[in-house]
Length: 77
Length: 404
Image 1 (cartoon, rainbow over the protein chains, first blue to last red):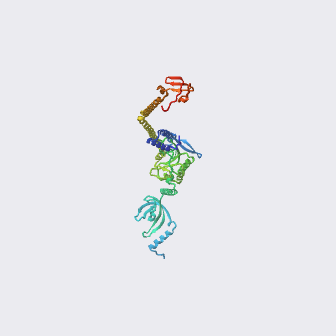
Image 2 (cartoon, rainbow over the protein chains, first blue to last red; image 1 turned 30 degrees about the horizontal axis):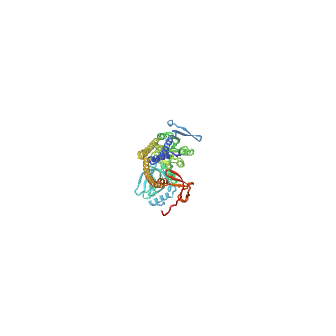
Image 3 (cartoon, rainbow over the protein chains, first blue to last red; image 1 turned 90 degrees about the horizontal axis):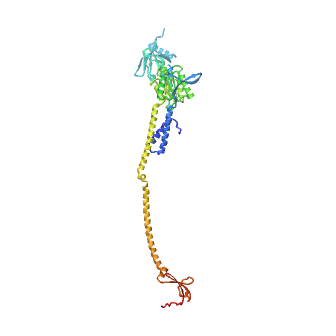
């Protein structure tokens, strides 16, 4: 798949594809190509949204070095 | 004898003594304002007092209008000016040329001064403000690890977009060391590039409690940050210097969480809608194509494809018939011509001649005898008649007389 820089670019391209297809004056084969590209882009976007796993970390400094440790908000009361 | 002075002379003397006194001619006094009156002339009249003493003050319009605040009864202030004599009233008065609020007033002053300084340097310019990333993966939060602020940020953030990593940089948010800790955190995040966006946050409080976020060191570390910084300090109406320098100001810490991430549900719905439109558009396109083909198939060209062939066939047949007719006619004409010729030929045919009674005489060598000169008596002659030949011998040769 052609490189897409980021989520926003993908959405922009999707809008363009949908507009073009809705207009209807594109040859059938190109329409199918565009549709497939659209499906690939949607897959990319949903993938991006799920990419990162939820995590809460706290930065602690020990002897001048920073490290990340998991953090429980409830414990801090 | 002692010199006898008039009242005016005495008063003038006192005034001169005051004016030559280095302390009284340039004095800085703290006290509390009471009996404050802003005269219609623009001059301010009030009393400065402490526990034991009072002194009357007059601040003339020229200096008074330059004040950045409005003095009030009960306000603790610092004034700079001189002490002199009001001759007509027999009073000594303090004439402030400059006044500032005391205590917290110092903070206001410092705030104003730093704000102006940094604004002049261009730290607040809107062109310098960075855009926040649309889908940040790592969000650094510089705030107190205890209290409602971090809890609110966490709640709002993960409810809005659960797929992020939140990195808490715990700092003091008030007091002596706070400014240094906050700016250190910002610098560390930039050094390690450990986040895509930074939130610095602190809950509501007095100017003194919020003070660390008005310190120059914090302001500079925000300015130098290459990672975008969102500032959420105090209540909605509190504006700190951090707010001015930051790439974005949030009125509250919860609002900051809303500003840094989009709403996942909304994005998913939007993608869902796009998928639907995509499918419908393609289906529509295919349907159009089908209808077009169906229309084509209804046309006569499709339904009776042999029509044209048959039409052509008929055309060819017509041409063929024409051709036949003209050929036949031509043949007829030729036939009759031939017939005529044949008839003529026939009449001229030697056999017909023979049938009419003529005979052909040939000599022994087969040559045709056309003249009496070709024959001598005794010559052998073959006579051809219609139904055969007669072998003869010439007896007598008689030449024909032309006159007969």
